[in-house]
Length: 243
Image 1 (cartoon, rainbow, N blue to C red):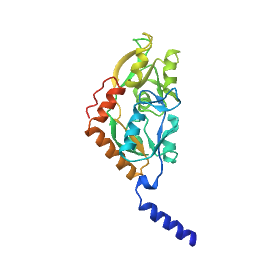
Image 2: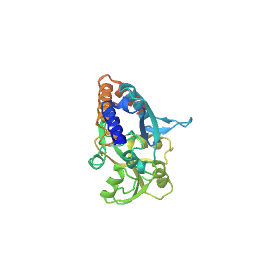
Image 3: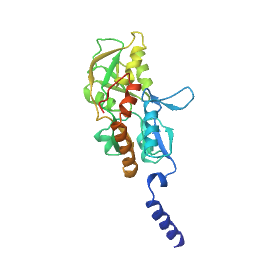
Image 4: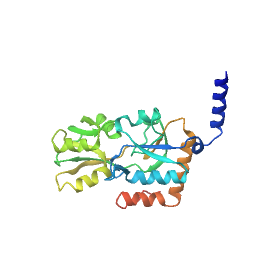
């Protein structure tokens, strides 16, 4: 009985505290393999647009945050299992994902997806198309009539096109742009861009409504004072997000 009473008292005390008071650290989960959204720099640290964004959100929400990396194919299960508290990893907001986790408002508008191949005459609707496992691009390819081949990392999808394992790759155009530019003409965009998802947001457990509110307020403030637009322009070649 004593233990039960002490447990109830602890729960009452925790319930009276805000997220920042009841959670000494908010763990920000990312992939660390999808530049310029997120990547690991030469110092072995999480870097990129979402690192800068996440740090600013934590500052405005008065949260003490630390960064955690996780492979993409298990990034949602490990959020649900409480191995970290957010997903900030270029994750598009979709109805399917929203059935499992919750999202803040979008901090990045819907980004066109694009096909890249070594040959301009590739049939992206009927050929073999690579995509990263668990992405909206993989779902699109699977429903398009093309043959889908999935890979755990985005780099592996590019390698599959280069070595002939796939005819093309479908991924976010912002990710593909520098790869095509640096290929020296070996890779090129083919077909039409594809608009998928409802923008990119921070993923959270459905129960963490207070944390969602704090992050939503921080995103709103960044939109209102122009900080978010400036940050997007910095990392995405002058892009105007329209926020």
